[in-house]
Image 1 (cartoon, rainbow, N blue to C red):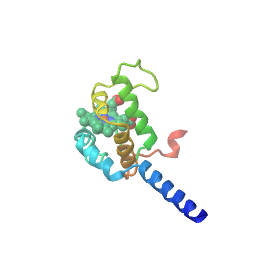
Image 2: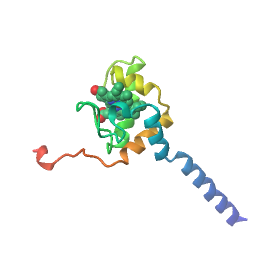
Image 3: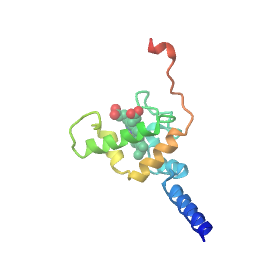
Image 4: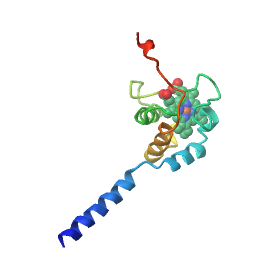
Length: 123
Ligand code: HEC
């Protein structure tokens, strides 16, 4: 009986773990569905203008923070380090659920990236 409960607990933990893991395929699909690619490029590193940020390979928590900050800005919160005021991205970010943000940012951060910092640039 004790073995049964240990096994049952193990299964329960596996189910919870799976439910919380970001879904990379869903993230890629959402990036396409919400037309993010129309500005950032289908590979998230070929933006239509050179001043638009490259998203591929960026840290997931940074990207998620940015998207939530655009949502806050769009809701009228005053600008701060945690609030981004941007007319384009405010509208885009408002369409995203917390789940969309988790999946999209997980997919973006898993991509190869041209972003880099060279040690001499710190000097
Ligand atoms: C119409 C063009 C356009 C579309 C469509 C668009 N973006 Fe953006 N995105 C931008 C621009 C421009 C910026 C830079 C805005 C700024 O200066 O804050 C940006 C910034 C971002 C940033 C912050 C990046 C950083 O390095 O700080 C993220 C994350 C992002 N976009 C994700 C998305 C996602 C996800 C979608 C789709 C839901 C999307 N974008 C759709 C133009 C666009």
